[in-house]
Length: 123
Image 1 (spheres, rainbow, N blue to C red):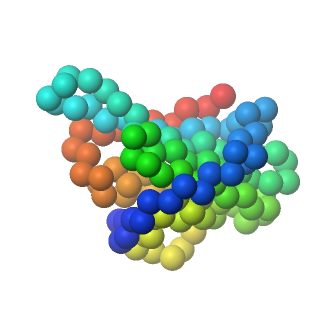
Image 2: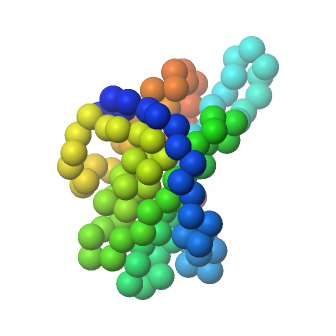
């Protein structure tokens, strides 16, 4: 999987942040050999309220963000895909059952990160 295009957008709907319903977060953690420092340039957060799935993505110092919400029966990966598309990403595959880690890896490779780790955190 890879990113075909990226046209940065700022489409975050702050109402999609549902902190009381936080489920997990995926982060791209990057180590910079020159500065010997870690950074987290991309963060994706997922919230599930029971009937809806919300996703928000933030590009820290990359000037993009996005969000989406879907009915829970459509699945979390569909929501994540639409969220990333709202931030300006176009992916190689149109299917929606791709693991979230694969989307994050594609983004890390697109930005040219060499020393990165995809971290998943739970509440």
